[in-house]
Length: 191
Image (cartoon, rainbow, N blue to C red; front, side):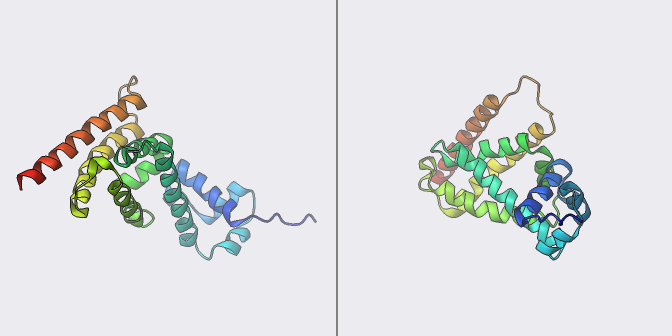
């Protein structure tokens, strides 16, 4: 009898991520991951006590992926990069994006908190946002997030005209960011 193949924790996480990417977070089951790996369920339980432990590891992978997309933008304008990375995530991972935005669930509850704090810290390094308090940055972030989420939903669900491309999306984000920042400066001056 051939020895049983061993799977690393990372291979199991990657298999679960592939399932989530295609079918959504709630589709991750121990049995599906085992089938994806071509194994029994035993190797999964050797590495993870529960399905919740595995989905938490997949969420961590998604958070790391989100930060990777953000780091790849690296235009020197963190606020701009946040929006572009969001659009890329929606285009490249539409099922996960829709899962996070339209199906808030136990797997995604901490995503906003984990990502939000880091994004505000990045915004503090954007010269276009100098002079704003942390509360003001949170308000600016919320306004842009509302716009970006709407645009990203349209990207992820194919609601935009065929000719709409990434360059147009980036231009639209830049225009809205300018409007939001200008408005915030004017409000700050007026108070």
